[in-house]
Image (cartoon, rainbow over all chains, first blue to last red; front, top):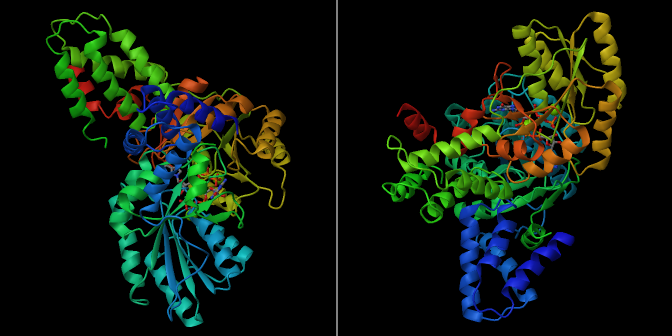
Amino acid sequence: SKTKESVFKKLGRAIIGKSKVDDEVLDNLEEVLITSDVGVDTTLKVIERIEARVSKDKYFGVDELNNLLKEEIAALLEENNSGEEADFDLPASDTPYVIMVVGVNGVGKTTTIGKLAHNFKKAGKKVVLGAADTFRAAAIDQLEIWAERVDVPLVKQSMGSDPASVAYDTLASAKAQGADVAIIDTAGRLHNKVNLMNELTKIKNVMRKIVPDAPHEVLLILDGSTGQNAFEQAKQFTKATEVSALALTKLDGTAKGGVVIGISDQFKIPVKYIGIGEKMEDLQLFRRKEFVESLFS
Amino acid sequence: MFENLNEKLERSFQLLKGQGRITEINIAETLKEVRRALLDADVNFKIAKSFTEKVKEKALGQDVLSAVKPGEMMVKIVHDELAELMGGQSVDINLSGNPTVILIAGLQGSGKTTFSGKLSNLIKNKRGKHPLLVAGDVYRPAAIDQLKVLGEQINVPVYTEEGNKEPVKIAQAAIKQAKANGNDVVIIDTAGRLAVDEEMMKEISAVKKAVSPHEILFVVDSMTGQDAVNTAKEFNDRLDFDGVVLTKLDGDTRGGAALSIRSVVNKPIKYVGTGEKMEALDVFHPSRMADRILGMGDIVSLVEKA
Ligand SMILES: Nc1nc2c(ncn2[C@@H]2O[C@H](COP(=O)(O)OP(=O)(O)OP(=O)(O)O)[C@@H](O)[C@H]2O)c(=O)[nH]1
Ligand SMILES: Nc1nc2c(ncn2[C@@H]2O[C@H](COP(=O)(O)OP(=O)(O)OP(=O)(O)O)[C@@H](O)[C@H]2O)c(=O)[nH]1
Ligand SMILES: [Mg+2]
Ligand SMILES: [Mg+2]
């Protein structure tokens, strides 16, 4: 695309034949990264890495710089195995694999669950969904429509009931049906609300009465257009639930989602999925290289 | 990341102390910290840059009054400039129509449906109006049910047409019903859409054209990052909206998107959402938002006391 060329042209002009990264290069690089929501800290980290490489290797051409940059950013994601997931596969086990989905309000939890159910089902897995968001208006109806769409069973209670009890029922039902995977929806909650965060810990503990090592995965959903607040989200949800994977949604928009680079680097949580639309097909496995590429396009 | 901003500024202000006059050289470090604070708060890259320039111009050559320390004067300049940029005064919505038609627009999950409920609750209770909510989101699973549940909670009627996939027709029919039933405000909830989704942007333009709203409100998540400017600009180019609603401010986001949007589209921020409950809605206060973006409420109040 046009922007991609101009960014690298600018960078290239300022760097070719020089043994030191000058201010113009750094300014341009900073602009690309900051406007992708990478954040100041991670941007400085990337720039330091580039400076170190350039002072060692000297004389860079545009293509080399291009590749170097992508390598260094990808490395921040690689160090904790982001983008290594080969397929919508699950470890074989005699209990259902339990995925608990968490995140702040409106990021795409329920939609991602619908999409995951679709993909697991397509991969031949037996899926059960649990409607443990009993708070938000019509949250249960929303997940029910997804369950119908994808054609998988849903466990629910009435609005306002105890979410931990719904999660418990879901695992009991999944176990009885011999399901491969149970996915638990939870209500959106802002990470600075202590009571709501404690509720997640409770849901987790109650599920262990049925499946002792549940949840096998706590999937934190981040909205791809979120800025630096995503750091605080990752921190507080990890504290309450030991988040084990990230999904980044709404990447079909113009936001770049660069904040996950720093999060993945700092918290060592792999990015597993990306959401690229509102339909059930619109979920992809996270690919590190493609993601880094998109920052510059 | 944010906590030590005050400390950092204090430290760079120490350098200014006793120098009598602010110069290009002694202000550089302070400006760097201010710019960084803005970026950490998600203020757009370009806007942070031009804002810092403006602060510098204001500050350069200022005589340091004996009563005010140079550092503190800088804080005041930054804060006042921020508040000024965000509009200085709160701006009310236009409720002069009969009925008044209000169109709600924004990205997916930003809080449109919740805000539609909150706004109708507010104008019913505080302004003595008789609003009608309109379920114009024909796509999202259970969007209509969601609005119905909210309407029931706050005792506001909700116009729905289950199965109708044409928001334009739904909106027109709702206004007709409002006139017949004596509802003096019609609030139209719409589906979330991306600015790059041509078809969906055409759809909302068509709704605007068909119902000529008195007030179009753009709803945006206060946690939004650098993309806020692009989105706000696109929506404004299409809809020429009248105001902005910032949601989810009950979180701990700095909310720099507010400044970015205000600078790019020059439309007032009218309301802020501060919770999931129907009562959790406030009018926007530019000065409080300025404090929040810089995380410097304490310093500012100190200066104001002095
Ligand atoms: N364009 C786009 N929209 C998405 C994507 N994922 C989710 N959405 C939309 O974002 C909105 C919110 O999605 P939900 O799944 O309801 O989000 P949630 O996190 O469950 O929300 P709460 O339960 O209210 O906290 C809906 O309109 C979805 O259709 C995506 O990848 N791309
Ligand atoms: N904490 C908090 N949550 C909010 C606020 N406003 C909305 N929400 C929550 O954010 C989520 C999304 O809100 P909705 O009103 O469904 O958003 P929407 O823009 O209508 O979403 P779509 O129709 O899917 O595009 C829900 O969980 C709401 O309860 C707010 O001010 N504070
Ligand atoms: Mg949900
Ligand atoms: Mg809605």
